[in-house]
Length: 502
Ligand code: GDP
Ligand code: ZN
Image 1: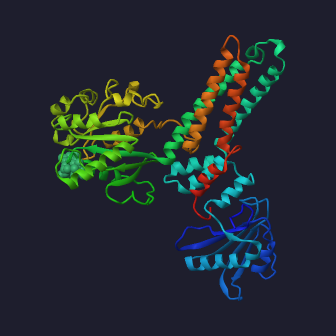
Image 2: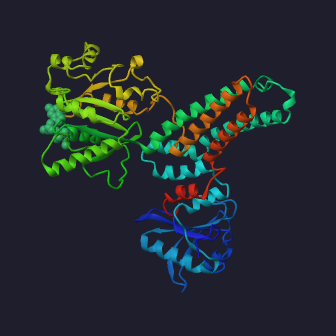
Image 3: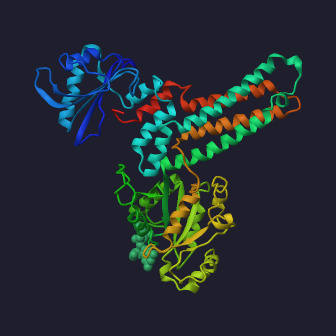
């Protein structure tokens, strides 16, 4: 028998391990018979806390705790929900869960699949799809900023913007479809219904949503930053310096956090996964060349490449060879390390850093951060500035190179700022919600359809049928975000990434 969406389900809802309290959660259409069996006929008043013994089938106490009953539809899932709060130990909770499953076996009670409680909340319209995703994102948030934004999504802030936009599209579609029904009238649709400002508003709102969704996505998934460079330029020292200063919540993510070559740090609440790599050079040594091959594989996957060089020999032959091999699509930040070893005039002689020493004039030499803004630098960045909507640097130039000392900490603040900047993070802009790639893609597709619609309407022969069709497609894309149109595949993909008990 395959799991049915209408079976009652049960799971331990709290995290594995020991805690003061642990919760077993049950959801189903009618939990009356189960409650009667578990509590020997004691009726549970909905939304009241009942302190009761939790007994096994033989009448032996497993635990004593609080039973909470939420009657449908006033519950998280929209079904009857029973929550048993016992002592938070794995053995107690396992026994409690087993007891529920056994008492509910004639009702078809089974163990819940990952995300199944939230999936029911979605199917019973307690939450839309973007809100359901925000449940997982709130739980998984690795910084306070990410948690705040996830909560905003969960409360419906993102969905409300999307729905308002969808309503505007529906209104326009109604008008254009009414016009299409009377083709003999030969009216200028755009003129008659003042559709042009309405369309312009929709385009503008979509652009704003896309920009915010991009921010929200960075906040949710973080950035994959790879440290590349020759051996001994100070990559590991820099990783340690950046990680050592991080005071954000550090969540142990398998395979990244403490395995020495990768660290998760936070800058302004943005999670950054920083990967150290084996130094890049030509080598005959098989073991070392394996490490180097892995380094290039990491570089291919990076969102941002930090190319670290020794400030005493900037841009030497090997570094030029490295630059040649870096993927052109990825933004590169060139960083000269060990500037503590340089005299001020040597520092000034580094191409691209000269301007900075001019800027730093009047500051104590060596104590100031050495940075510069060179709009002409780094072709790899040129494509990226378009998405970086904040000229946070004076003059709006793209920073090309940066001087730091991993040893003394000079320039690290500037480096942190530029890492975010180069990745398109806009520190000034609110990021009102967490977004997923799915949301960003849907918004971009909707924007494309609206742009096409405008083009059709602007033609001399005003192709109104094509115009209407593009609006319909744009509307579909927006509805996919909140889950008005979904496929089972999409739902499976979203909810299977939840933990059990959510
Ligand atoms: P990696 O091979 O690129 O990972 O380089 P390491 O981080 O292992 O550093 C190589 C050597 O350079 C070590 O002896 C570090 O102490 C030294 N080093 C790293 N950064 C600095 C710096 O900013 N200033 C100075 N003076 N030495 C540094
Ligand atoms: Zn190293």
